[in-house]
Length: 369
View 1 (tube, rainbow, N blue to C red):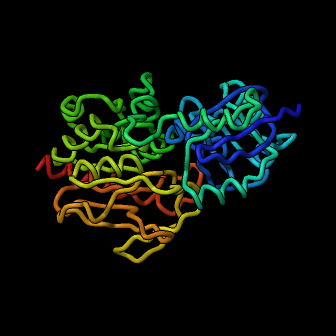
View 2: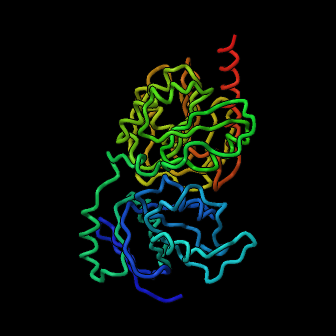
View 3: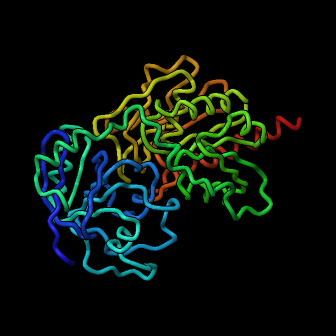
């Protein structure tokens, strides 16, 4: 692996030095960290990381290579990758290539031999911030100045940039009992796989579609996916979700979808200091007082004090008591801030998909009676 000096410059003036393991290049975005020990390919291909540079806290990355089946969308979306050390070899029976080659193929800069613990501590202390990393700019101060000129994620509609225009229906459903209309704000493939495995036919609509057109499909349920950026910047998606919510059909939202539902119901969202990103976050379901270990990836959160009286909090993140789930008291609408599809992550929360399917069955029976 050829050594090539690289600089990582943050908008607050902090500069870290490392080496590129993908060759020359530059990358810009909001610098965040993820604490998962495995699943780097799923992380890279999660559309929620669009516009962000990801620091992985686990020290050795790339040891099991990459393969087609572990991708969570049609391409990697992270703007760049920062790790402690890239493995010199990859060894796994499922591997079809190496992490460095995968990143090079998609034009993503990867930097290692850097103190990721120091980066993570800095972000936790100061908050996520804009970053520019480069092998080409050797003057740290010029790189910092350029990082300060980068646009913030606040107020930007990034979800419409990551929807897959070629994805209109997920394959594999055989004589489905139920139909789901999914709003693609940056949908992860495993969400679609699980719904299909539970007997659903899933039609997929882009985040800038017409709410009336989606409702006209008369599905048994609406699913609102995860996605990147500031939910308050996605004004059209909020209006779509508002239309779907008041149709009376069951609605289930995940992560960005949870935030859109909160906004559509009259609440507000706020940007978190450094967000929640990892596969090991404790969440309590308040009804049963049951603690789940959840996979999370979000930098914005629903403000529980802004929600109207007809909406109640169902889950709390036990690290900071932020809202991790909500439901409407009269309408069949619920959502969670975390990722029950668990790619990567534990499987504690997959019951939520079963709950959605049960709601759809009940709705279909009521509609036919």
